[in-house]
Length: 331
Image: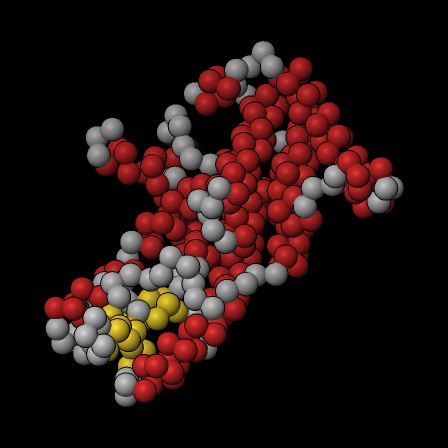
């Protein structure tokens, strides 16, 4: 059986997502920073594919402009929002962006007037079709961007790159019909998480493997010689003291001053709430050096993108984790 145009676009989306997220995950792992230019590069094929998809589905102008509103909202994470003072100061870029916002808003209003007789519930249960269904699915993309933006601003998602990555997913894969899923559980489900939020959940599930991986690594490296080591081995690992400063880790080993005036080396059970300054870290390392400490326990600063990248595979195979897991639980 030959591939349809929907299949080609779907697998192209998956390929673009793997390349964009893989590259971003590598930069985040090495430097803990993903420049805005990376997202500007990869949003271009995402927009091109989305435009081709809308053309194939004979979308009308309201849907194109509503899709433009999704992109406009996501763009605020990169270029910020124009202010009234900037517009009054005749800043050319701010005037253009403001005009973009207003035109996109016209698409949302026009779509609401044209397809308002179809309720969101009808869309969710599959009682809508054609452009009405397509417009509501595009509005759902706008809601997804809003949820990601709020999660970022309220520090539920800490990294700016993480939020921008999820926004790219929302643009590249706006709904499950645009992705060639191997399992049909998500498509058969009445309610499913949007692809971007489903990827976030798969990334969280992937993160749950870290304690087991660290425990195996510590056993293999003979890092466990006491109950205290066993307690740390689930979330930390040992590292040479000389390598700590140039690594993306929290130092758990430190020197504690006792009430009797003496000092001893001890290991904290968790990372500090606030990352110490480079100066403070250097002082801690020098103090440990004075006590002849050569190896210390550290907790790795694990970037979310490193977990979102491999999470693409279960998402492409199984779709939404909630839609997949709930039937297994008899729900």
